[in-house]
Each structure stands twice: as C-alpha cells, then as structure tokens.
Length: 183
Image 1: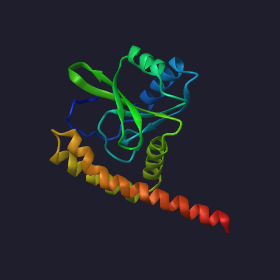
Image 2: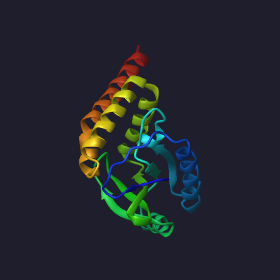
Image 3: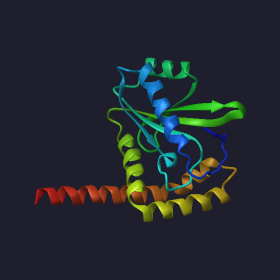
C-alpha cells in the first residue's frame, strides 16, 4: 500500500494490487485468529474498482467476540489499537502505519452483533453493481478531496450524507425484495 500521511487526503486511481494486498492480509489475520473470525471483507473505496480511493486498505472483520487476545495479537503484528468507535456501528479500530505516520491499513473489527459490518459490505456491493451511483460518489470524493486535502476528518464527515443515502437505498431494495418474496 502506498498509504497517506496521517490526517491528509490523497486520492489515487484504482490499483489491482490493493486486492492482492487484501488477500495476503486476510490470510495473515486468519492465521493469528483462526478461532475468532467469522468473516473478513475488503471494504471501502479500494474495494470498488470503478472509483478513486485513498490508498489505505479498509478491512472489515466480523469476530465471535473482541477480547484482550484479539487486541494483543493484532498489536503484535504491527497494528495500533485505536479503541472503540461508534460511527457506522460499534467497532474497534486498528491502524497499520508506515514510516512518517503514513496510514496503510484500517481494520474495522465488529463482534457478531455489529450491524456496521453488514453495512460496509452492502455499501461496497451496491457501488460495484450501481455504476451511476459509483460515478456520483467518485465525483463527490474528488471534489471533497480538493477542498479538504489537509483534513481527513472533515473530508470523511462531508461524505456522510451521501453514504447514508446509499444505506437508505440498500434498505429500500431489501424491503422490496422481502415484499416480493412474500407475494
């Protein structure tokens, strides 16, 4: 991963190497937590080939539980434990950094009750199957990255309304499928 300096926003065109890095990272994490993992998914913009992304690998991990052992083992392989977060469901954040405080990976760890895991995966899948929406998201990201290149927190918050609208569309589609299945 190329990574991005802490707090900064830099976007890159999609790179196929991101998927390869995800697969290697997934294997490494599965090997250290074999009894704890339910699922591991590549999420975020690096998992959406049609759009640009910050070159930071986002990985969602669904765990049976998040305990001291999980934290210790992820820290032992180089991840900084950043503690619990409440945006997009309750999860625990771990960050892999490179030289010069460059952010390389973000691990979003959910226990099996975490709905945020499903949302991240559904968002990725929606973007990969709804080209028009992905184009709109890409344009928004580029515009916001230009405005907020020195402040990743504001950049991220500025995308929240769009992301929520996608979550709403996903929910509407699920409800439509449920109604269809009932008839």
